[in-house]
Length: 503
Image (cartoon, rainbow, N blue to C red; front, side, top):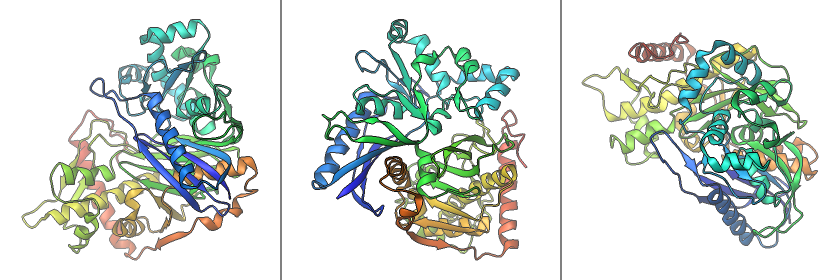
């Protein structure tokens, strides 16, 4: 049987999945790899350990399906993580600086004080200035790693995000490339002209020749050389950043289509179409992949704490035995009892962008139980999603007719139903919630001609359940007003934070 192979390279582990001609899953393997924290706030990965986890998964999957013929490969990856290697040896020159790493926060703070540069970066890239993105990480590596400077002086330095590193390894050093959705997360890429920005490369001291060539998300990126479980000559024909791959995997092909991935945090992405939205400063404007393979504009809202709030209640306060028990506990009480939990455990992301905010629980009375607090934590994920989708609808002018849900927490029926009630739209959960790998496979299959158009795999997007709103709009509106009040209390407790966008 001919299959498409998808590599889903994430922050804590790598997954490889085989998909058949109907888009159904044939085999899957997952391996974790170590995380390194050399200093407080610093996060690193060893690039060869990432590669080893991918190779192990490749071998495992092919052992599960020995009769399969792999026709093409797709890649989805953790996005902003910065990696550097030497073209002569193919060896990494330093541990990868992970998207979570805050080592360049002071540099970004200085840039934010320069209003001209801050506005230029927002205009060119659609991004706020933050250590989250790759540019300041590349700059730090050049300035602080002697091997990096020596490689640069020899003209052999290669910079990239993890997709570029995997392409280099898979092709035996024949391909140094990326595509629009990953390039758009570096804070070096012009999302209107679709090219690297000369102005920003100069600002961060990153040489153009060290950066990868930028292609569309599907098309030919090169072919395997073999020697790591796969035969040589298999084309790599689809690449995208993980959240954009999930957007594509959820078939969000039309303007207004939106998905939310409920994980440790939550990422809401909306397809805004071929015209760049006006630019709500509370959101990120970035690029996604359209059905033609060309980029489309995407609005993105990052919610820092979603499942992390449940994890904290479980591990920090011992209020529940497992995340799975949160649904039972939430249903054990008729309502939240007036309790609201603002999960600013690491600050508040979109649309507030207040890194100094801290978690707050309001409305506690003598009658409050642990069930109320657990329910409030689940409800907070839904309110935070509405915070973001309201901002998206206002910026894009597009109605959001439904929200597609994926990620581990989307298995919670209470969460999905309350989300539908708060938004007033249907929430749709697919049977296969691994939409990141699926999106990478779809891109590769289209790029290779394995599938001729998106209609050929639309049947594979089978729905597990659709949750229609049942709560009266007046009731859900009152709940959201009380949530907004809780947020205002949280932000007012930290007057030096960036809470000017609070309603």
